[in-house]
Image 1 (cartoon, rainbow, N blue to C red):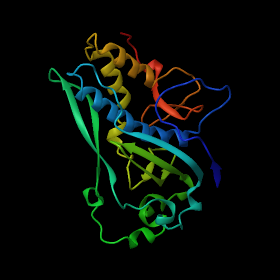
Image 2 (image 1 turned 90 degrees about the horizontal axis):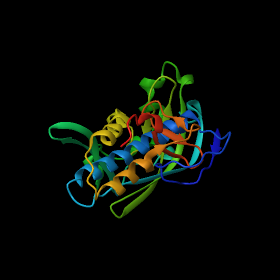
Image 3 (image 1 turned 60 degrees about the vertical axis):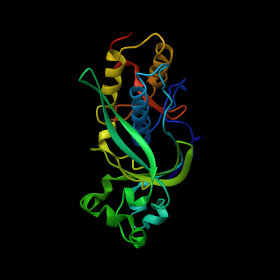
Length: 260
């Protein structure tokens, strides 16, 4: 098992990259999925507030990842789920997609976030199911070729709307597809969040009208999420690029084809 520790930092923004330092594709895939949640909430905040002045770009959710352990999936297949991850108790982070348009033309999909009880997402009786080994919930996927799968276990700290929570989660990774997540608190593995994310952000950058009162904050938002450094690691699922220096993910500079 490979163990590595990184400072718990926000997943967005770009900064200087140290020569020769790199981030693994597995870590970028995990960080990219959680960064997609952050960015979708930012999109929702921007578009929901657009008709107010000044334009608000406060992110609705902040996610930090730390305390990583990685290895072949065979290392944890027999481990009880409740040992690997935090089971769903207390309040969970509930996300819901929100489509935004301007003059009847689709602009982007945002995500609204609120805290809710377990039964708002899950319908199960008792917690004995979480004493089962990991292989039971992934048996159908892993049965044929478990040697092709890897895992990354990590700690998550999430804060939103004045509340925060820390917990453990795990990602199941493979070469030919997006990662799967065993995260019962936030559940970042919704493919809708990552799908067309960069496209939506570029669309906003190029199409959304900007009032003079909005320009400084709106421009700062895109500057904040743009990755200028070549050494960032691209996540194939979200197309976000993750900087190994500060572990943050954003949109590659080359994606913005037009400049205001």
